[in-house]
Amino acid sequence: MSKVGVSILMSIFILVGCGNNSEENEVAILENQKWIDEKCQFPGLIDENGIVSYKDIFKFNEVDNKISIERENYRDTNCTDLVYINTSKEYWTYYDLGIETTQNDYDIHNMSLEYLPGSVAIDDIKNGISKDAHYAISHNRVCFSESFFAKPMEILSTNIDSNGNVYTIAIENFYIDNTLNKTDEIDFLHCLVKK
Image (cartoon, rainbow, N blue to C red; front, side, top):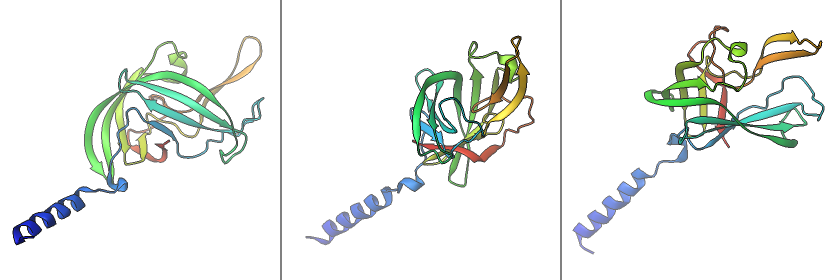
């Protein structure tokens, strides 16, 4: 083989070697993937089915911009003994407004979140129906602004209905916060991972 041929062959190997980034260096996309709670959620209650903990699963649908939410229910506090999965519900519409900056292997995006009317009484859980804030995404982890996302469950109020039944209004996943003094800073402690 000529020197020119060897040089071309070496250049190809070098270019191929430089083009192979490991998965750790790749940034994922939010849309059309399932994201699950990073940690087992333990509200401290046991229901009639023996459920003591759960993990929520989120899918961000690119076609209609809806966020679908399912829940895996477990009989143990380590989320290993799966009992059943709640069917998907859609409470939110989201809009990815694009990358704002990059920070520590995360792409920080602007995001708009809107509550879908009719899911529950809007006034019971928040003041606003839409908000712009942020999310941070790496190759296998996504974290949201405190003002968007509540983990673990936060009790807003405990009430008694006209029949004397006690019920609570709680924030369990996405919400729009205008009342709890959460900031638009990214909460890197309560995140989702790729399922």
